[in-house]
Each structure stands twice: as structure tokens, then as C-alpha cells.
Length: 188
Length: 121
Image (cartoon, rainbow over all chains, first blue to last red; front, side, top):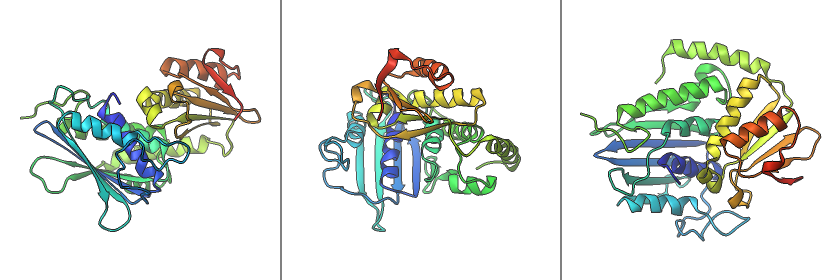
């Protein structure tokens, strides 16, 4: 994938395909390290050797490239990817770290567009986004689609007005922690 | 997370948009959004199509997404399904191609041979 944004969208699709009803994304960016956690409540089919491209839950073919490609992207910069069952027994917790200062780092791309795209593509799944500034244990909740639906009194958020609003809002918050479309900006 | 005033304004606009949408679809555009599609730029294709639908002011065009179709070399791929007609699948649909296909096929019903991949299911 050309950008971290494309990877993130691709991996979120895994959570959706595993029949998650709620997916939580936590992002932080400190010392050029981009760390992302994805916690879902889907039903994982296989976890063993899941980052092997020839291990996949897909039925029509024997190759699944999403996780292996993300792992390669993370590791090519000295980062890592971890995937494990969530402690509650249902759902998985995925964490990946990318060193954006590494010469082989992919650019961020438009991370905010990931969040409008997921709402456009998967209307029934709810997402939460937390952004963690440095030295904080728990991040700030930036987006809660279930709450947003309630506030607006509607069932799906795939209206262009709302998607533009979400994208703009997420973009502002990402800039606040130094995430731009390239490799991040130095904050004081 | 959000300020109340902004939300209220959005809510009004959304209500108006929802009222415009009819229940049935006239044209369905299905975008392949599997790993191969994403790597080939299908998200940009999908967003371009969404913008074009919004500009067209037609309430019977629906965009939905699906996974990999198995022809990864052809990505980004889209399927245009006009109501009552057999679906048409296009390959190598970048942003420019998406606009051409939208204007010619989705709006006017003319198949665009240049990007045609297959007809029928």
C-alpha cells in the first residue's frame, strides 16, 4: 500500500468482515512513532499464523494479503504488528507501530479520509476514535459514531454533509498531534 | 467532540437530503474495496463517484462496496447495475475513468467500451 491510511482502512475492513458491531481505534504519535491499536468485537476465524499470506479466512481463494502487507510495512521501519484475542473472549486487539522517521516509511496519506470512508462503506458498524497525546494514559475520544447517530437522530451517517464534517474534525485533531499527509510535523 | 450548533445545522441539511432519497434504486454502483482494490486506489474512485452522485442531484443512485472479485490485476473495478438490465463490470477505473463512466453510463445508459471488463454477473 502506498500510505498508512490505505493500510488502516484495509485492516478495519477485517474487523467489519469478522462481524464486529463496534470497532475502537486508538492513535498516538510521539517521537516519530505512529502507534495504532484496533479493538473490535468480531468473531475471528483463525489467529494462528494469520500474518502468513497463505493463511486466510477467505473462502474463494487461498491468499490474504492485508495483514502480511501491514506487518511488512511496520517492520520495514523497525516497527511491529501484534494481533491477539481480546481478553473478553470475543474480538481481537491489533496493534502496529511504524517509525515515520525511517527512510522506508510510507507517508501517512489522508488518515482523516479513512474515517469518512469507513462510514460510507459500512453503515451498520459503529466506530470510536481515540487520540492520545504524549504522556497520557487514556486518549481523548475524538469520534463516536453511535453517539453521533443519536445526536443527529438518524440511523446511518453516509450523508455527504456528515462525512465532510467527520473528516474535517478528525483532520484537525490529527494535526494537533503532528499527523499530516506526509511523515508528520515536529511539534514543540 | 463536537459543538452543538454545528451539529444542529448539519442535522437540518441531512433531514432535507434524506427526504429527497426514494426507497428504490435506479442505478447501483458497486466498488470493489478489497486489499487489491485499496492498493490500486479504489478509495479515491469511490469518493469521486460519491461526489458525482451528490452533484447530479439524483436520489436513485446508490453506491455500495464489496470485497475482492478475484481479478486483482484489473483493480480498481466497479460494477454498474441499472435497474432491469444486466450488470456491467469495468476494470482499471481510476478517478478519470470513474468520471467518464458516471457521465456516460450511469447518467445516460451508454456502456463505455474503453474500460469494459465483462457484462452479466
